[in-house]
Image 1 (tube, one colour):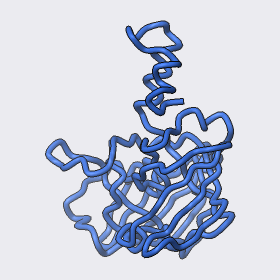
Image 2 (cartoon, rainbow, N blue to C red):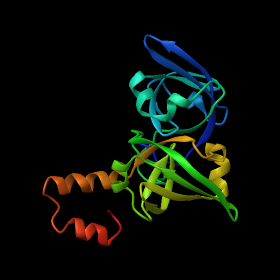
Image 3 (cartoon, one colour):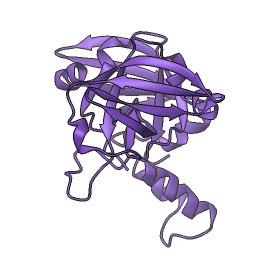
Image 4 (cartoon, helix red, strand yellow):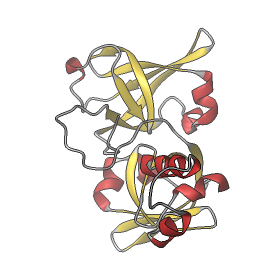
Amino acid sequence: MFTGIVKAKGIVERMLPHGGDLCLTVRCGDLPWADYAEGESIAVNGVCLTAVAFHPHGFDADVSLETMKVTALAGLAEGSNVNLEPSLRVQDRLGGHLVSGHVDCVGSVKARRNEARSVRLEIEVPAEFERYMARKGSVCIDGVSLTINAVSDNVLTVNIIPHTVLATIIDEYEAGTRVNVEVDLLARYVERLLMAGQGAGLSRKFLRKYGYG
């Protein structure tokens, strides 16, 4: 599990085909890699990957062809910057929201504009995922926990404060940039309860009243 609070930015050093999959080497000098062990989970742009080896300035991770097909990692190249977050430890603060690292869909930046000192983004998601988005709800974009300001016609709007712009790859976004999107886990569980006919007191009317739907 992760929090959606990016710990550092890294750079893709190598992308090597390996046994039909891909070996990704990420370089980053801002995390204490000596403290981590083989098999650790690390979110790369919001995608949970298993580190198969560590070196003084980064790590290697295997990426399956399936992962490349269903995430925006396929758009990476050697030299690309990426958001990094090692997995959550029990004693860590939960500064964002619970994130699994399992990407639900790939979205696309529709518009970007400066708003005072912040950046306002409009991100289009596939229509079938709009139902998981709610105003003031949470969403994870490329591994970054964000609050949704508005959602309409499968386009969600988020506001990025200056610190987050500088600490993540969001500053590189422009219209057309493809991003990994993970919806709030709570929304998925609520849907599951409704589909199973469980959840006393829950109804679609009730959820719509409080912003879910």
